[in-house]
Length: 337
Image (tube, rainbow, N blue to C red; front, top):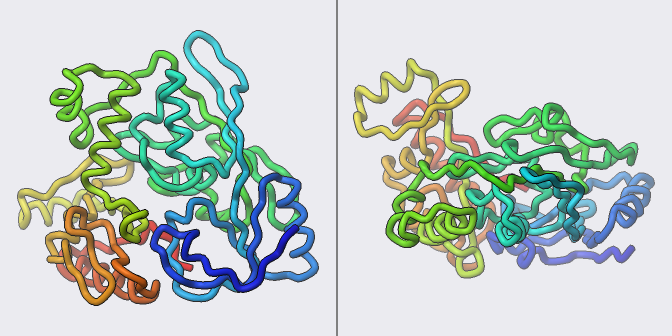
């Protein structure tokens, strides 16, 4: 175990925020994780994990031990003529896992192309895009308890997935580290092309040819056109969740805003947070080193060496303005550290 002291985390978070970790280490296996946990048991320090660093906003020095997840590996567990059960180690890049599925003719996650971060973070968020969520292909995940060091396999039901929610964000928040994720992928998939501009891209760029590969390419084109590349400009993708509101509130708002975009949700009606933020005049906003992206109001950006606390304060202002105008309280999708 190599434990480094006072490591700058700028290269480990996509916002490119320059904050230090008091102690920092990298793990490549469950054995190395257990070594860290055993060491930490006597020290009783705080411990936090970084994967792709695409869903965090650093606002201060991270005390305790910060662990970079580098668990790698993809394994085909079983298959038949219709499906393939595949296990992905949690340190694998989500997008690279999607590309592996596409290249192997396995459907189910092509709509989730170009989502940043590691696959180990996917169950925590129940990531989703363009009509597909992780839970649609999820079989199980293996995790290790950070105190008892016992391993547990969580089934689809046990994960208690909801919209950008799971048991790992509620009852078991901070209790487990996910070692691997197992998915059920389709050899004869049913495609979802009704969301966003997928159908339009398929028509104009792929002559209406619908396949795992063409959908993935369409989604990549759409996301690339709307979302800034974090290698070029610091950001963490969508900063806020799309709120789900009651039918009563929706009817009230619709009478005031007939053009209000909306989508059905399990427990209400989903409203695009980007639209709400844009209506409040934030799209393209810039002050000093931070701002709101000019093409996508959901994305807060670090133009150059900003402090995380400044981006957090900007998010507070946006939340207040949307609440005052629409009586809707936005929730941050990004974790504030």
